[in-house]
Each structure stands twice: as C-alpha cells, then as structure tokens.
Length: 322
Image (cartoon, rainbow, N blue to C red):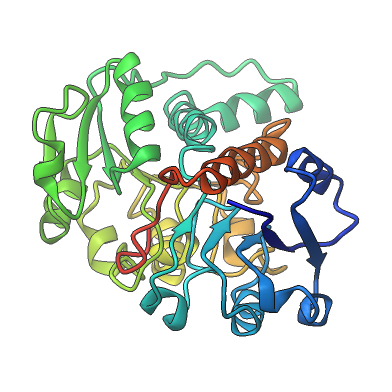
C-alpha cells in the first residue's frame, strides 16, 4: 500500500500526537479541532482518528472525506462515534476496547469493598478522633451481578471470583456465556429483574445503545435488595439517574458507586453530591498513568495492520453499537 492520508480530530498541540511520528514518513497527517483544518487533506483521506472528538465533529469531517476507508475511536465507547451514514457505510470502525478493562474492574471491586467494609464510616471516625468499632461484611459467597458481560464484565467476574464471590451475568446473548467458568448463572435482558433480585452487588458495564438506554430504571431498582449496591462503570444514561437518586434517598437500595453520569461534569447541586450512601468518581476510574499513550499505541498497531492489508483488531459491530 502506498502513502496514506490520516485525519486526526484533536488539538494539534496535544502532546500525545507526537507518537504519530512513528508512522511511516510518507504518511500525510492533518490534525485539528475544527472541520476547516481538513479542507485540503480531506478529499484524499484514507483514515480518520477520532481522538475523543464529538460525534458532530466527526460527522462533519466524514462528509468532507469521500474516500475514507477506516475510522478509529480512541475511546472504548462508540456512542459518540456512530452516526447513521457511518453505520450504513461499508467503512469499518475500531475502538479501544479492552484498554480499560483491568482498571475499571479494580474500581468495581474497590467499590464493593468500600461498602462491605464501610470505609466511609472508618474515615469519618478517624477524622473525628473516635474509636468506634462495628461489624463489617464478608464478601465471600455474596452474589455479584454483572449487567453487560463483555470485556470489562469478564475481568470484573475474574476479580470477584478471586474474592470468593458468586457471579451472575446478564447479556444480550446468554448462550455465549455457556460453559464460562467465571459465571454461575446467566440471564437474558428479559430476565434482568430476576438477576437484580439475586445480586448483593450489581456492576453495570454495558455500552450505551438504544436497547440499554434507561435499562436500569424504577422497576429494576425496586427489584434489588435493600441491602444491595449499584456500581456503574458503563455509561451514565444506562441508569435512570432520577430513579436511582430516589431509591438512594429512600434507602430502597444500600448505596451506589458511580463513575459515569448523564451530564458530565456532574452539575453543581445534583442530588448525588449530598447523599452519604453514594461514592462518586468524576469519570476517572479508567485514568491510569499512561492511559492515553496506550490508547495511541493501540491505534498505531492497528494502523500498521491497515497499511499491510491485515485484519483490524477491535472491530465494532456498528449496528449493535459496540
């Protein structure tokens, strides 16, 4: 394959773009935050790298690049990448799936332990100078329900099993988990109330699609045990925030650990800030040292495969949305 033209939807001053210097020297690279930056290069474009750009930006640039043959998303979620024209086209889309699975699974287990050991109470007692013994919970033998059993969900299951937890998984195609040694029970989306009633901890790790929007709502929260904890490391809109806030305020569920929200940053005055049974992460549970470099490394590896005509890794099912 000859020289290739790459459009990078990013601030040209972003230091992580320096890694693109490792591409073959004949590669033509154009970077910018506005569509106007690509007027010259777009007609000859082969590849678009969406470096955490908005869907609106990508869609505008897409219309300028009739010859594009591959689109890569630096994020794992692709709800801000897929738009109708791209979905309907034969152009493949890849993402950073798998890059954040381990660190998000660690956050999920940290959240489980935060509530099981009541770490908030310990910290408050320490700050107040109080010696205040109390009973804590053993998580061995407890049920962990995973909503969305993909890459992240499987790693969560592995970590939970190391603690002796019992794992139940909810996935669109339950048969794909048949024989999985990490999972004791598998449920379909239609059986989600049954799984939620079983679980002591619920980890939401599903991508955002039309089918998962609002998947955990009033009925689902009422199905959960009053002693259960909800942990969302997937996408904010998968959980009905208003319904969750009510359930937490009324103590219909024990607590929630949230890394993702409908609106980010979470607006000042949001009810979650005032609830003492909520653990908030400002969508940084996957921000480990070097994570952006690793995201770029993944793209560079795939670019080489594209250049050599080899199968791309992390292909997205555009119609399923992940």
